[in-house]
Image (cartoon, rainbow, N blue to C red):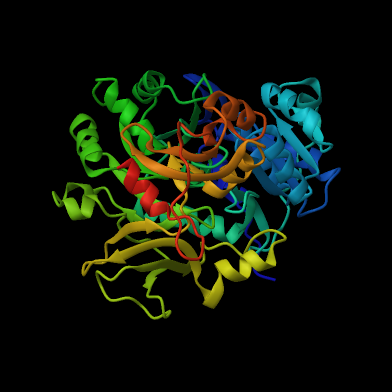
Length: 493
């Protein structure tokens, strides 16, 4: 048993230091001070502990809302596990995750709760109802003592085999992630703000602990989503604003034609390819405020980073890289024989350190494969240069990253193949100036696009659907019968 370190302590410290400072905002309206946020989280924790053992999984399914912050820290204070569901998923996909982790309760926004209810038997509690408000009548209790190795966040990544996998992130993992962010990427204080434009269920939510630890206010757009003009207005209204954005979102800010608000301090981008020309345009429009992260849910947002001063190097090779290894993380590129690759030699990117997950929930086979030899195997291919900058070369898992969301081809292919008129299907990513990449489907079969769109809409999340369909007589294959995706990508190019 290690010394007890509950991530809730980060909120406790902020509330002790800045009790009357603004902690939580909806748009420009203050919802809670740090003292009030701590009190609400502890009351929530007391209400949860009445019905749940330590280690119980509690899910949250919502668009961006201020309640996510109090739920996150309330669940941790109760010694339970926070399981955020990507709100863009199809309700059936959400139900699969709830079943996989055996969640005791799911807190849901009214809209998502209504969509999810027919698909799951898990106890559903809707935010902003009498039942939810009654929880705050519970008397606050001290937070639970937890082992730092205890599970804190179950982060579901899109499954390459069509099923999501739950990366098990401990209190120690989240602490390492938080410290690395403050060491490498951004240095906020209590006069700063974190604006949640990207989804709080994954992209933006992982940043909450670092900014809470420093007493920086959490700002949730009133729309609950990303709107470029609303975001820029919020950055003008809140001091020292920072945000995590997918490259698509950065491009949309540039497209507004507006300059940088005086209070916009930092934009961290990641989660997909950002082309050098797009990055230069963004820097010309908004100035030296950018930092880049490369990570995965399995090593949450913490493998390498391109720091703010790296963006000022004037070197395209640096701008086209994903930066250098992060604080507390060892990163290597392994050749096919498992030895370390020489500089400029391409191999698989692996990493190890306190930030790397313990494994996948209830999936020992996938865990053994991902953590073979004591390294997290990312499935990404890349190379280091002589200065320690890592450049991504290809993704061996064929994942398509569109607008910052991971889309696994096999998942979409399997659903397409459920349609009786589809004989073969193959999904590839095509470069796209707005989305980074878009999903393109090659289809063999007597069927049309409208039929396939309707078929997919009933089964998987809207964002995973192909933007383009190409109907072909056959798919190119090698002598083993494996589809040659490289040839299909070449056709698109």
